[in-house]
Length: 379
Image (cartoon, rainbow, N blue to C red; front, side, top):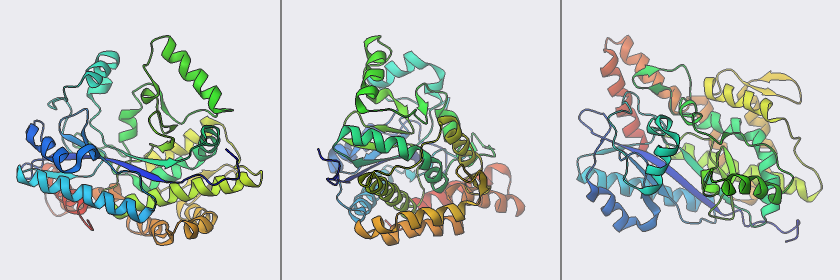
């Protein structure tokens, strides 16, 4: 394929939700099997179980535009919530539940999940976390790898906008994305190294497959990866956003960044590639502080406020947002920074409730109520 031919830049988005008891606000550890069956009856392959039975995963079909992806996700959230309500259950989009614990949770009986638990042990049992994955259609595998190499730099900037996991088992973790701390206990996670070509990536993957360490590329759980199932570049670093509009903003920015990097490549220009350990420093800052303390601009060797970095990104991708008809969607990122991510709002609700005299657990339940309301806002 010619490097000058524009990739499809199609979209696919996966989201993972938590099922809750609307009375106790705790997780529904053992939801009825009929709930998932009914979801699959209405949504077919667009819905599937997750490792924990209190979780449910949805995935859009291949979408040609950001607007189409939004329409699909709104339909998926609305439909799953409607069916859950029939069984007196609620739905929240958050990467961790504010106070639920992992030990009472029941796991889904599937060979893949049982094998993972056998291979990895307790770290898998602790995976009471939800995420958002975004696929961008890029047919040429070498281009896919080249864009992955460059996109690594921007992953912390995307994580910042998505944070929704400040609490873990009833404690304020002081992190905006505690989900990554839980996920980091697994092997083959984090920012990937850069690869010269898709062939080099396949050679490294084959070394693990041939030695029996993994079965295939689906067990590579990096923050970004060439999908093992589709001709896509799959971004996996983000928490799931509680508000749908925040999800769509991140989807649109990721899409436009991908097109911007491809556009530079057409003129033999590439984004400067920084060492993985430097990118990991920004990943940690995004995980710990969100946008509260800035990220490192390695070119300038300065700590820069995130709002300033966001404006630079929006300027970089403006041409691409216009070409892909998603200027309003990428611009919504400014709103996220102005009013806070889900993590910021969860902490605000909790602290305001405590200041008003609520005990810790009542304050936590108020956080769940906010999550429940905002998960369906705008859908």
